[in-house]
Image (tube, rainbow, N blue to C red; front, side, top):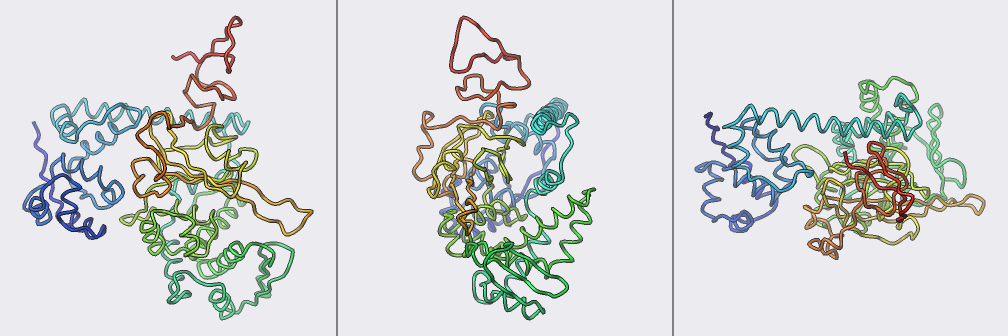
Length: 470
């Protein structure tokens, strides 16, 4: 039997403890070991055992992903990931996973391959859902869909642009935590741009030849500040944005233009909420959105969106999902750094708290939800109303939702009032009726597209059919 190479992680353990500002005795208690044992681990006098690796993944799931040493057997790592699939019941200890990979490598390799095939099948089902939802038999994508998928594949984090925006923010803001309106206007004027705030017209309009920027003074102050930041980023980071668009692989001119705008939006958010300052504040405040938006002078939606981009390697925030839903139930903006995925087209699950938030705005709604794969999420949603500035232009109404897996509930302030241990308190939701496997849901709009149904004329429940399991 092949022996596993011993893995030493002293540097990583010390970095993790310092990042969390913990004493050795506190971290040792969290891991269930003695302080002297932890000291030996940090000095590389003892190696990292599979049981300890399990404890680290459990106690520090976000930090350990970034700090875990890269050594060890690749088959053990991929087998551990496959066996951790939430659709599989229970959780095998790391020591058993390691023994399985070392004693039966052929079986372990085939199990990993089988799990990959299962993931591909789920992906094909999502693609079928996309084709049905968009009424395109070939599954073709519109330009805005291409850009949405580009950001999804990038994990909603654009490293070079984010770092450049962070440096630009430090240059403009000075001692302030975030660039002020006056500071950004001074930067624009120093770069030859004149500015006019006036009532009516577009939210932002820039005349490149005259170097003149017009901003709508009737829009909310957070929106006006964001548009100002967009213009600063578009001018200061034009070369970086252009290079990313050129390397994006998007074929149509429309898609490239939409990506240019999207990258400008991304850079504006990164300018107003500089990465490291925002990440540290989010962790310190346990992701209290209202306190964060007051600190950085941003809107509720802007703050939620920024939380979904905190995916910088070795400095990640907790993985969250974020989406925006209109009054018709259409998901108009979405991203997930969690295992939760949304239906790509059409309405979301009617049991999801976001719909109630859209109907009752200006109030935070909280829900403990469970997806069909068994993963539970702490979700918050808030309905927002943006004034139009005129009686004859109806205000924009929609809801935003943000959530994390229940495993991170201790770092998410919105979980404080939930009974996470009570199964009766869980709302069981799905991504889309077309791909949801639940066969006992009273609020189905239509049956799943990959399963047969049985209709009994002599019996009627809330849903007039039964799903047949394959």
